[in-house]
Image (cartoon, rainbow, N blue to C red; front, side, top):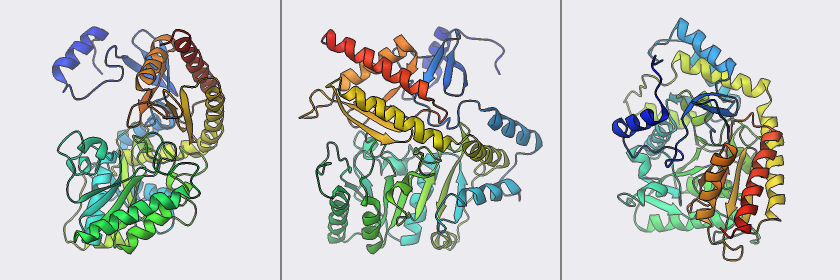
Length: 442
């Protein structure tokens, strides 16, 4: 730890000089300098406390003592290259396997969600011997070049769409082509993927994978309509491809009722590959790919060794095991269900008071509040959303951010120890801010 302490102004000046400017800060006009954290709370250099509704990475709470103790104990004992035989990696894989369907039985440990998704893409293309990938509109799967290529959220701002990438409509039942009033939006949206696959085949190309977040996050905190994933998997597998479920944002019990968000689609659905990351190490870089023995076998058969220096090292796996222990011991899935339902209920009641609230959606502690200028046209209220975020930070010391194609969705993905009182506070403050903005015609 640095012995000298920098003022906020000095830190910001050094960051602007030394760190690439494309690496943006929250609240870039007036960043918060955070020096310590605990649970769902952040503390700045002056000791002011902020309620954290953003950090889904710090899954069981910032600086959880059980996690830091496990990390320090293992680091004091051994942390070495993953080619040495060690218990932690196999014990951790066994624990993860117990949370997944039986066929997802082989694990590859890496260091980030981007690494996991890149490896999932390799596995799919090696297994199928096909190249093309179907993704959802507005998707984001990581910052590596291979993942920018399959992330419409990014590639549309850069080099554009590659010929091997095919974009299916986002299954948004609020503002998409098939809405809540449709008798079977899951089937209808799945059929758009079927049509897209047929179009790919007419071009003489073949699908390796359908790649999707189990709950689209950058797309606007969306829930996939029931039946969607199972039908898409059926169509993709018939075309010789595999279904990849990106659980980097949503896994490890965030939805409450299930350990993985893909399980919301029913017992009859199982992906061929699952990727996981962000919350896995509670802030420590840890990620993973889970797949079937058949797909893993095809990857091994290519004759090229897969080696990851740090993926699955003893310290990372000790931390991963400790995270699983805390989720169970503190019943954080139960807390996500209880507090998440309460938060949604409070926000839904708020909708009756404020016309600008177009939709409240989510499950567990994955919740979105969509702001619109008018409910009929659903015109995104982007500027209002930004103002609400700014005022929550400045007036109430609550950290919230926006998402969605138009940045008009307030997103809530807090640490899983978020409380009923926290939910009440956030909603009371949003209510006050919206009331004030309406009164002053802002």
